[in-house]
Image (tube, rainbow, N blue to C red; front, side, top):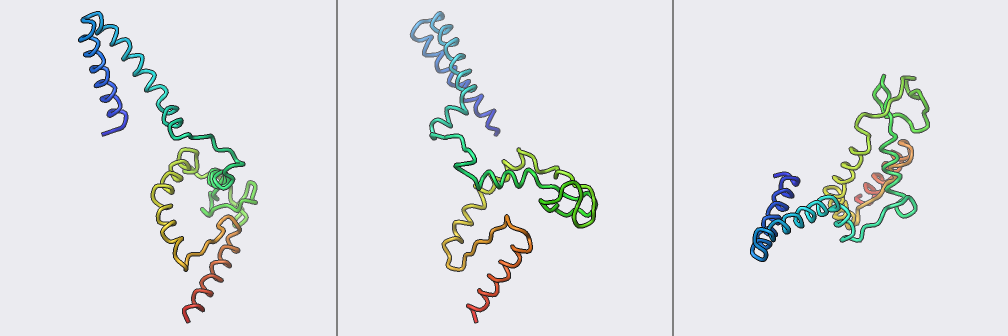
Amino acid sequence: MGNLFKTAILLAALTCLVVLIGGAIGGQQGMLIAFVLAAGMNFASYWFSDRIVLSMYRARPVDEASAPGLYAVVRRLATRRICVSCQTNADPKATDRCLKCGGRLEQRADDNQDVVRERLNVYVRETKPVLEFYRERPTFRVVNGAQASDKVAQELDMMIDDAAAARA
């Protein structure tokens, strides 16, 4: 059952409850006043529900100074481009043309704000708990994936060699 439907059912039930209480207190006139009051409360609850929840959790806007890593990830994902000819991810230093084949570069169709937001939600919901589990293990290592791919490969090779040497 969708959240919108559940919200509508809840607001309708609360409206009925308020109208019944209004009828018990003031008769038909009380029911009318209670209905108008309930309609106003429902409108305010629906219209301001996002702000109510955010204030309950004491949420604050995130700026680049307080979360530079988050801004870097979103910027990186939202500005990725792909070569139309060879379908490789473009080097961030490339301007209009692929450095590999000279093909035209395009923004990836799935790299828009909504998709990036959903990817981050999936990360928090599914990946982060697994990451925290493995982070506590002594064999856990971190590689900076934001650097050039050859540097990442070099770091990974060194870590694999170190792990193999430790097992021998």
